[in-house]
Image (cartoon, rainbow, N blue to C red; front, side):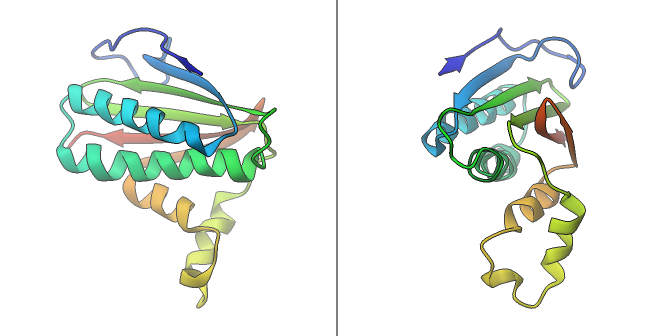
Amino acid sequence: MLVRMRSLVSNRQRGAGEPQLAWTIASDIGEIDHIVRAVSDACASAGFSDKLCRLNVPVALTEALANAIERGNRSDLARCVRVRAWVCDTELCVEVTDEGEGFDTAVVRAMSDAPDWTEREDGRGVFLMYALMDQVETWCDAGHTVRLVLRRP
C-alpha cells in the first residue's frame, strides 16, 4: 500500500519534519520496485546525477528493503516495513524500519574480509549500502531502522 504524505519540498533538513515520501508495506519483496522507483525519481527531480539515481539509490535502497523484509521481518506478511524519505537539492535521507530485532552492522561488514565472502548468501547488501551511500546508520527502537544518506556532490 502506497501512502504519499506530501509533494517534494526543497531545502528540507534530512530527518526533520514530515517526510516527502512515506510508505507502510507488508513484508513482500514485490513491494520494493515501486518504492525504489519513486525515491529514484524524486532524486532525479531534485537534480541528482543519473549515476546516483540509476545506481547508488536503487541498489542501496533495494538492499535495505530486502534486508528489512527477508531478514528483519522474515518475510512474514503480517509484519510491516515503514519507509520514510526526505529529498532536497543537496541530500537524500531514507529510513527503512522493520519489526525485527536488528543486527550489528560492524560484524556484517567485517564478513567482507572472509575468504568465502563472495560465495556467501549474506552480508553483501550491507557492504553495498556502505559503499554506495555517504552515511549509513542503524538503531533499534520501535523496530530496527537503517538510515541511508546520500549527498549530492
